[in-house]
Length: 203
Image (cartoon, rainbow, N blue to C red; front, side, top):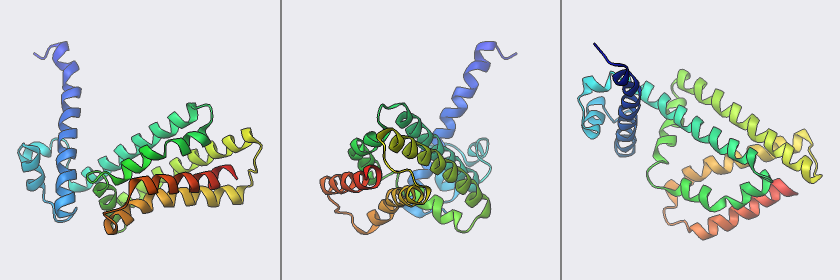
């Protein structure tokens, strides 16, 4: 008979196992691409049997969707943190070094590229990704609007829509450009980010 203590630890163990699979999949996707990486390759990288992986993910699509959820959790946390700051607009500018470092980290940026590539072919993944990204955009727009109102700046819908879309395109585009410019200088990017964000947010 399973004890209460045993039942309490099972969800944590399952979460750790899922994370183990996702970390392995990230490595395999970076090396072989989403379609090139097989479940057997992922299982070997994770150090578990393919059958064991299927206890947590029934397909590679499920793995990609889990990465989408991970990204959502990260963005939601970031936006929540910004909302708690005294001046969210200045916080976006001041956080430039951290944002740049995250985008230039050689491991994680492979996974978003695979997510977007698969979304271009798979309607289910495209719908889930679009749903989450539009929700995140809506929250970012709210924060920018609120921040500009506090500063007495214009809050015209047309202006804010364009500027928020430009910010998002900058973040996502940096990962693509990273493929072609491996020698980008962090300091220059941080300075460029600050200049661009200051113009978009505070003028």
